Image (cartoon, rainbow, N blue to C red):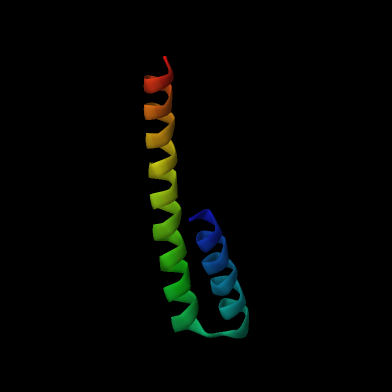
Length: 54
């Protein structure tokens, strides 16, 4: 999932450089959503991983 976030961030930066505002905004919003989903899943896995190992 982190890979998709990086792909959409790069796509948004490239589209922003070339001036495609709509494409850049769309890719940036997708990257932002995927990033927050990744962070939440990472925190949940840390919490449950420690709980079951102990």
